[in-house]
Image 1: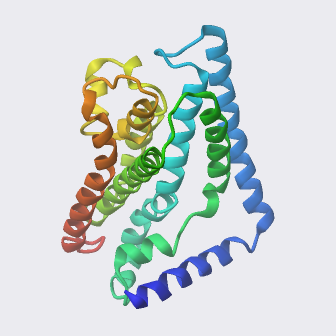
Image 2 (image 1 turned 180 degrees about the horizontal axis):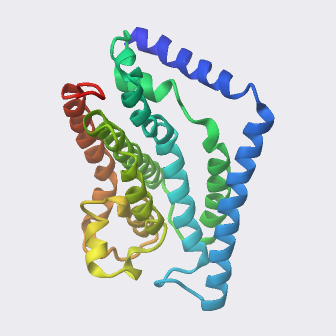
Length: 266
């Protein structure tokens, strides 16, 4: 454990140093992501200004939902997306074999040697929008409520990291798995809206097989005092437990794939 406390910060510092060699490109990337999401959220706000609400959610509530969704995604994806999207290449080129013999856990090395600081623009936009939204909605804040809110946010980020870990781990057996990210982002796009606007089978799917409904809709609906379809009074505990359960499943999947990894040649 002491060794990890030394190695992990060193890995992160080395990666950040490599990325900040070109600060102009890095800042431009942040600004472009900020502008892309900002323009999309502006379009949603204009639609709600015209029609009043979406599935019973007015703009300040939607703003909280969107910001929670983006912040949870940014935190989870910074630890997983780019790192595990490159698993295909690592397996195909054989560089995964070199990682297996490093004196540190494979998952730990992959995650922290590629910690993605490119999500800074996402996080700034999400925190700013969330700060405004929280001043516009009626939530009774207490120390316990704040802890639950942060717990739900952390749980949502764990879901993102867990799913992306499982997709990347699958490449250890299938060699190619990046096409699964297209499926993930299809559900991810839907997860930024209230689930109640979708047909019942899709709602069930996003609360079970593809649990991205817990990424934003369920926790935000709980804090806004809205009824959560299919879950009812269990919505709050489910929002807190979804992340750890997904992480546990991802851990089992990762270990299974690692045990059965035989290289790109099979």
